[in-house]
Structures are given as structure tokens and as C-alpha cells.
Image (tube, rainbow, N blue to C red):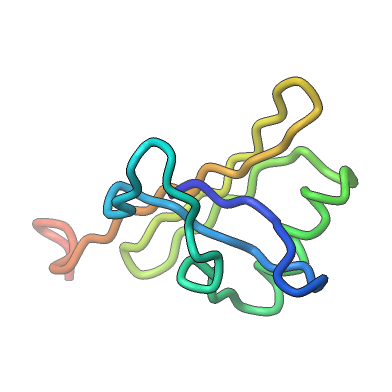
Length: 95
């Protein structure tokens, strides 16, 4: 997923776009359909990234779920790449 910060009616929001986002080349998206739901700590981290206060990635692993937020800045514009993986059944041989 690609995360970007934008404005809706003058208020900052975090938007997410992923492989299931079907927009034609010149189509303008309805931003409200792409608002990202986050926890308070995720939102704080992402706003720090978009405010230019950090470029550190954020990694977490918990109960077989792995997530990473990876900021990228090119030509002064920042996006965050979010990747996740979940293991439903645990590892073989573990109790």
C-alpha cells in the first residue's frame, strides 16, 4: 500500500492506495474513499514522517503478523510504503 497525506475540505488526512485501487490514467479519485484508518501511534508516526521530522522506518512483529512502514522522499515529495504479512497457523514444530 502507498500512503500519502492530503487535504479534504482544508483538513489533513492520510490516504492509502493499493493494488485494488482501480483508477484510469486521467481519473481524479474521490479522496474520501481512500482515507486510511490508523491507530493513534501509527497516525503520530505518519504525521512525523510527512512533517519531515523523521525518515526512520517503523517495523512491528506480533503473533505472526509483520508490518513495516517505509518512508521514501523523491524530489522533496514523501510517500510511505506499507507492507504486511500474516501467518495464520504459526510455525511448524512450535507449541
